[in-house]
Length: 94
Image (cartoon, rainbow, N blue to C red; front, side):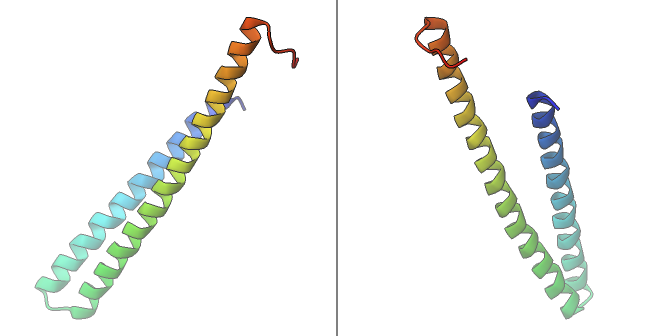
């Protein structure tokens, strides 16, 4: 698998995960509102708990995504600098 294919696959996985969490958040919010309206206290509490858990998971995975993006950025900067040195002729690490 090439680097480009790996990056595309990682982006697709991240988008699919974000979509799943979005559906979970909206469903949980809807269940909470309906439960509150129907005076089912335990379902309202469960909906709030699921919504909070989903929010925390979103934060966690967004942080991981940012870390991966930063690592990729650092590697690309390093690759750029190496390419620049090779074009100058100052680098001999073949």
